[in-house]
Image 1 (cartoon, rainbow, N blue to C red):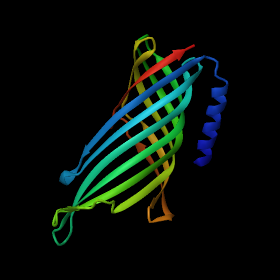
Image 2 (cartoon, one colour):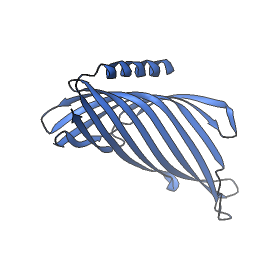
Image 3 (cartoon, rainbow, N blue to C red):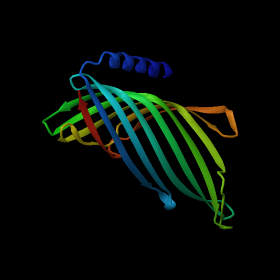
Image 4 (cartoon, one colour):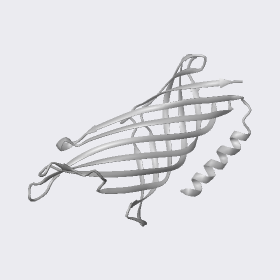
Length: 215
């Protein structure tokens, strides 16, 4: 998968050098996701994703994207001795990559686009523990994990043009392929590998703004 990512970046670089449309696209997405599970299990995730892109042909854009995410989840467990423990996990994720976008306008106001992207990602996961039998909460993480690797994703979205190529973009998820390694802070030399395909269309919502500058 690493070779695919490198080939994608090389293609993006060549297309950017050959850009002739003299248009730059600036934008960002914000998203919030909340999940309520069993036994008061909860998860909240916040994501901020700025982008910059060049128009290389009519309605075709090539650019770079960064995604910063923070998520917090909690889970209660009870052992055989009826001691209840609450584990809280905090994840900090950074993604850096490139993407290709095709925009199809239906009118001067409405249009849709699709982003095909690829890049590198890294997540730090901290777990703290609260023992309900003593009421004590650990001040330092009881476990710290590091997840790193590559991703490829496709995200369709709706664009609403307010005025002068400035508007609102809304997406409802997409598909993503991840190839990652996971290890713990006390043993970075040993790791586990995982490859997964995530279809989350309709399970989340992202809202942002985009502005195209022509010169």
